[in-house]
Length: 83
Image (cartoon, rainbow, N blue to C red; front, side):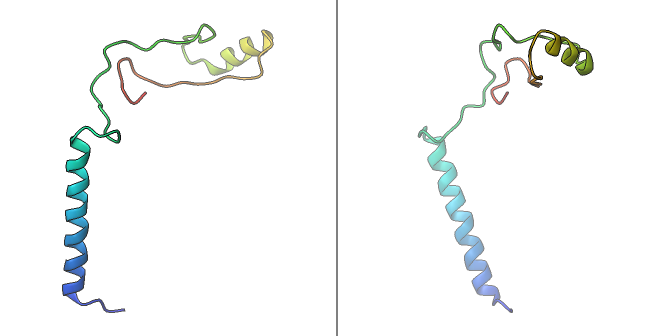
């Protein structure tokens, strides 16, 4: 399939202009925008959450001894808006 160059340029310019319009709209503060600034408060964890040295075998043995069925491993960083 041989696409003429002028159609390809037209489609690419259309996609570029639509993406720039979407970027401008998101900067206006609509509900789709996301503030990825560093969080002001550090993370808070539930009571059952245990900070560990990531010895997962030992943590799993301890969890099963206390009647739990497994582990949840959470990886994150303090003040990170994505974590």
